[in-house]
Structure formats: C-alpha cells, structure tokens
Amino acid sequence: FIETVKPSTITVMYEIGIIEQILILIAKKHKITINLLQHGIYYDDNLATEENYFSGVLPKISDYFFIWGDSMNTYCKNIGISNSKIKKIGNPAFDNVLNSYSNLKSEYILLAAQAPTDFSLYDLQNSTYTKYLETIKEVCHIAKKLKKKLIIKLHPDPHELDLTEYVKNINSDVEVIKFDNIYSLIQNCELFIAIDVSTTILQAQILKKPVISISVKDYKVGDTNTQIF
Figure 1 (spheres, rainbow, N blue to C red):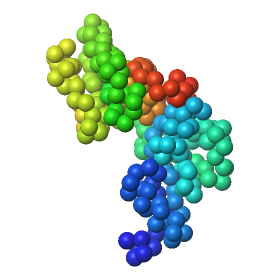
Figure 2: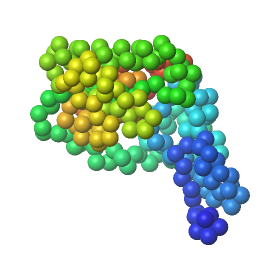
Figure 3: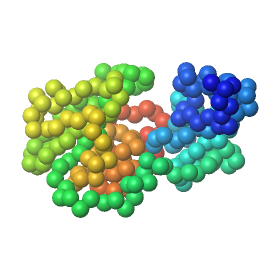
Figure 4: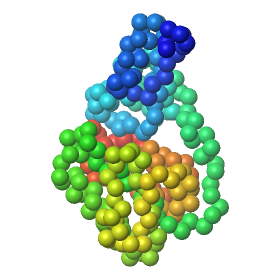
C-alpha cells in the first residue's frame, strides 16, 4: 500500500498498537513523516511521563506531535519534548461545541461511567471494582433522594462493563445508555459527573456545565495534579 500510494505523511493516535508499530517501521524506511495525534485528555503530571511513553501517547518515534492547546504544550515542555516537534492544532471534535450552549430546560444529571479496564494492575484489583460499583450505587441513591432524573452514559468500548442490570436493581428509573452521542447528553444536562479523568470533562466545561469528578482509582501518576482539574 505505501509503495503504491506513496503518502507524504502518516498520522497515528498512539505509537504502541501493533498496526501502528508496523506502519511506523515501514514509514521510517521510506522516509515518510509520522504525526502523532493527541486524542484525549492525558494524565499530565511529571509522574505520568513514563506511563505515557509506555502507552504510546507521547512521541518517541513520531516526527511531530499534534496537540490540542496550551495545557498539553506546557506539559510537553516540562518533560523536555522539543518545541520543533510540537504543533498546536486544536481539536476538530470541539469546533462545533464552542459557544453552542443549549436553550433547552436542563432536567437530568448525567454520569459518565467508565469502568476499570483490563490493562492496568490497579484496575484489576477487587477493591477498585468494589469502589467503582459503590460509587455508582451512591450516585443513584442521591439522585433518587433529590428527585432528579439520572442518566448513566457508559464508555462505548465493546469490552466495557455493562451496568444496566446492576443499576436497575438499585433504581429502576435510572436510564443506562451505551452508544448515544454524549455531546447532546452533556448539552442538555444540569449537572455532569465523571468517574476519574475523562475527556468528557473538558467537553462539559466548554459547555459551561457544573462538573464533578469522582475518583475511584489512583494510578500513582499524579492523578489529582492533572491540569484538567
């Protein structure tokens, strides 16, 4: 493909994926420029740097790092990434979010719930799962006590833990959604709650929504120092 099409650049979202590693290796042999694209809010305390390189979201091999804005730019400078590698391009996904505040009546609380993953030792601990589920239960109880409608938006990852039955046993009035567009859900909520660090926090902040982040795990990477907070 590369020999036939002869692309001038290849853009990847992280360097660690199997397909990405193959593409990057071939691109280097053909002297093709490699761009690494920031695709989410990352833990950006200095303690997170080793983990970020390991997970491929910082440029070890890429020629350029396309970032969203000043926060990531500051972090990159602090950890010694060359200015010549950094290109601030914004985030196209947020272009339509700015200044698009909803006139609809806000009538529900929205909880963005991303369960513990299967690629972190911290996430695989029983205590982490217990704290996550207890947090979901507590939010359900508080919403019911306040007589507020609660919508829980699951992460779209196909491996995400499905909370539907668990939540229905706590409060049958809670709506659990997996695949709907979270932008419209955030736009029309009166309060946004996120589990730990999530890019959706930034989306809610842009839309001027009050945001609560509930920490259920600590990756030991300066979690609470992340600039999103």
